[in-house]
Every structure is written in structure tokens, then in C-alpha cells.
Image 1 (cartoon, one colour):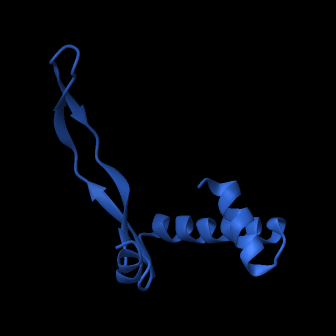
Image 2 (image 1 turned 135 degrees about the vertical axis):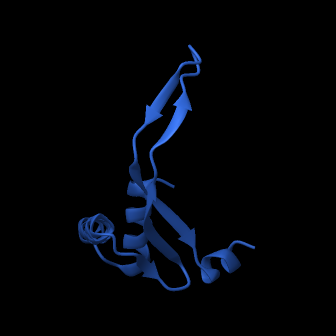
Length: 90
């Protein structure tokens, strides 16, 4: 299911317009993104949690040449499934 299919399904389920549902989906991801930028963990108890993680700088290898390269430190996002979500797919 892609985004437009999700928006259409939620609109059909709730009786709201696709434009309204699309606005809500945009707002959810905007809020999650801004909170992760601040370093705040975002949790929807039982369903999902989003957390910013830090990856330290490290040495790696260029797979074509085998030369050692320095990989810079970076931030990433960890997404974890909650208990309700896990139980619903069993």
C-alpha cells in the first residue's frame, strides 16, 4: 500500500475527504520530523516509536578498490513496532 492508497482507505473508513486526510498525514510526519530533529523520541504507545540515533565516525573500505575510507559520524532514525502492532500481525 502506498501513500495515496493509504489516504484513500482512511478517507473511506472515516468519511472524511481525501484532501483532509492527506493534510492530517502531512501534519503527522511534519511533527514527527521536527521532534526527531530536536532529539525527542516520538511514541504512539502500543503501535510505533521513532527515535533519533547517533552513528559514530568509523573506518570503512571502498568495495571497488579496497582502500580504507573515513565514514563521517551521522544521525539516523530507529523505528520500533509496539505490542499492539506486533500482536495484530501474528
